[in-house]
Length: 396
Image 1 (tube, rainbow, N blue to C red):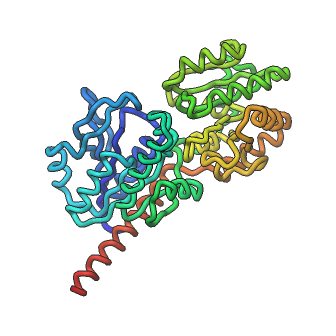
Image 2: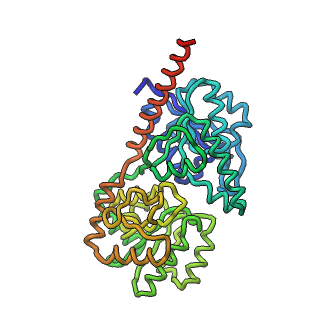
Image 3: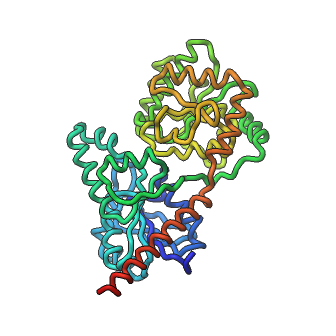
């Protein structure tokens, strides 16, 4: 790599709020700050003090109820812009296509450097849900496409996400970069299983299904419950742990009771300390993740770290890389198909264990590895841009 590549990395919502996109940017910064000169730009939280080892510059912000977090107003903060411009950068990168994306383009133009972005989220269903109009939602999607088209290159995690990005109207260059986990590959699974049994009061031989993520209907939590109801009606006994918080938590708790589940069968845990997540990943017989909204689903890699296979929806971005019966399972987008696939998977424990081992082999990647790929790509783009600019000067 070039001598300390200088990167400006930013997004509209950031720590202490937590989600998959924030997790990605944070891990890029955390794993990359010793290899590159990384500066993060993000919204300010009142009374929150940064304690990360990498530099973070905070901008003015406003509370945004849709995501229940502070939203950056970078383009309106002159002091923030002045502070950011005290340093020269080789490249800027943004993880969200809103206000911060406009700010990063301004920095790139002022400093004569390339601007890159990661296309993380499918905003189309979120817009439709928010405005209640397909027409208006598509107009909003077109605006995002125009924003991405001002960037020199966009990163995506799979060909399926590239197709989605293109549907927003983006016509530029694309690179594939994977997302990872900070959990190392598990080497003490049996020990973790014993700890999980003790901590969560599991019986040694009972089936345990898990979901980890935001509790929102958009993530198809209701489909999980519907499919488990089909299994219950067939006499299958299990415990299902749904880990996470979200806007539909109360609704889903009511829905589970409407379906006739007890609090011993279906447990909405709320937030779980990260130190206990390995217990659940190791103890879970299956991760159930039917989301069509997620463009990746970091939990797929996290579960793979503990050799736990997942059940995903056929053709979904979250299920990309999964081969049915080999390193995970795929079901059609309906409750009966999910119920059938889950029942099939747990009916053969030897095959289930093998699928988990293959998931660890095929789907696992660490954030350190991902960050190395990320910085290598940024360096290549910065070098190409610089060479192009110098060639243009010579020709003039």
